Amino acid sequence: MLKKILLMLPIFVVIKSSELITMINNNENDLVISDKIHLDRLDVNAKNEIGQTALMAACEKGNFNLVNTLLQSGANVNAQDNNGMTSMMYASRSGKSLLIDLLASRGANELITDNSGKKAYDHASTDLIRALLSNPFRSARVNFNQS
Image 1 (cartoon, one colour):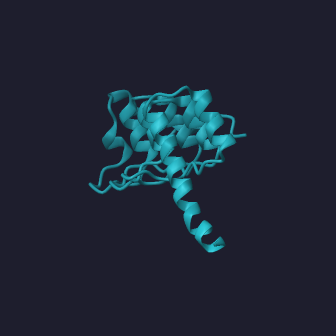
Image 2 (cartoon, rainbow, N blue to C red):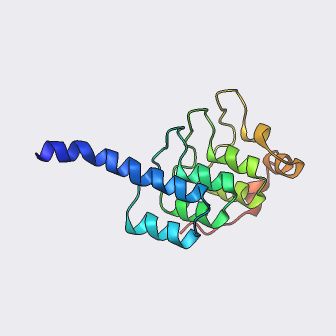
């Protein structure tokens, strides 16, 4: 009986974590999502059917506060989805420069390539983001609190 329960546990975690990604994609309130992460002790690194994590979904939405919450909750900043996309690539597409800086300050590797051989720079939605990603001194000017 115990063995059956243990075998079912990972499915429960995946379902609950997939719910987290759905909440982000549906633009749920940041505080509601944050409470769900902490109270339900969700696996912030769980992936949905396309391999996307909650951090990737939040970066795609350009949601700075939620990205910060997920990073503080232990989200893997360099995880890749089924297409090899990283959170930095999703942030690059969103056009939010603060996300780029935040992810870089938390160790995001912008040199990772996706399955097509593209880097975060190649996914940039604006010239400003491309300029930001090509600036070698960017991380020296950013000082986010990493508590």
